[in-house]
Length: 277
Ligand SMILES: NC(=O)c1ccc[n+]([C@@H]2O[C@H](COP(=O)([O-])OP(=O)(O)OC[C@H]3O[C@@H](n4cnc5c(N)ncnc54)[C@H](OP(=O)(O)O)[C@@H]3O)[C@@H](O)[C@H]2O)c1
Image (tube, rainbow, N blue to C red; front, side, top):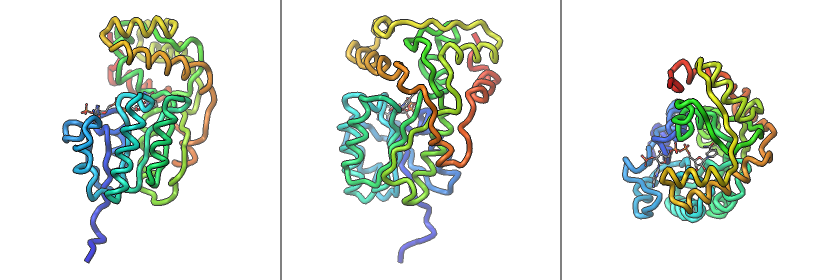
C-alpha cells in the first residue's frame, strides 16, 4: 500500500549557490523533503550519467544552470535532463531563467518541449550580485567598474526568487505552463545602487560605467577564457540596454505581497559587514 504520509521530495540543483540554498530552505519550510544536487553530492551538469541517481523517485525539481542559463551548453543540458526527468516520472520542473536575456530563450524552449509540467521563472538582476559573487570584491576595494551605464534596473532579492520557486514547486498545478517575470519593487541605476550601499556601509564607493568591450578585456586579463568573456559581453550589451527598465507584479501575483526592497537588502548586508574594506 502506498505510504500517503511520506513527504514529497524536491531535487534542488545548485543547492550550495545563491538561489538554490534559499530554494532548499523555502521548500523545507513548506514541509517537503529536499534532495540537494550539486557536485558535492555527485550531481554534475557536465556528466549525464550522474543525473538519474539524483532524480529517481523525486516528485519535482528546481533547475538552475551554471554559470548562465543562456550559455551555449545550457539549452542542451536543460533539455536532456528534463527529458530524462520526465522519463523517470519527475514531471514537475521549475527553471530559473533571466529576464530579457535572448540567449536564454533556447534553454526555456528546451524545457517547454521536454514533456514536463514546466514553469519558467525569469528573474531580474539579483540584489545579491552586490553582496555574494564577483562584484563584492570590487566594492570592498572601493569602486565598481561595470558596463551598465546609467540604465535603471529593478534589482531583485534572491529570497523572493526562492519563495516564488518554492510555491511553484509545491502548489500542484497552479503555475504549470507559466512563465513568471520577477522584478524588485523599484528601479535603480547601478550608480544609485552603489550610492545606497556606500551610505549604509559608511564608505566612499565609486561607480564607474565602462564599455562592455573594455569590461570583457578586463575579464580576460583576470583569467576568464576569451570565449566566456565574449559571451558575457554579448549578454551585458543586451541586458543593459534599457529593455528591463520596468517593473512587473510577478512576485505579488505568486506570494500575495510586495517584493523585498533593495534598501532592506542593503541594510542587512551592511550590518553583516559584507562591504567592509
Ligand atoms: N546573477 C543574476 O543577476 C541572474 C539573474 C537571472 C538569472 N540568473 C541565472 O541564475 C543562475 C545562477 O544561479 P545562482 O546565482 O543561484 O548560482 P550560483 O550562486 O552561481 O551557484 C552555482 C551553483 O551551481 C553548482 N554547480 C556549478 N557547476 C556545477 C556543475 N558542473 N554541476 C552541478 N552543479 C554545479 C554550484 O555548486 P558546486 O560548485 O558545489 O557544484 C552552485 O551550487 C544562472 O543560470 C544565471 O543565468 C542570474
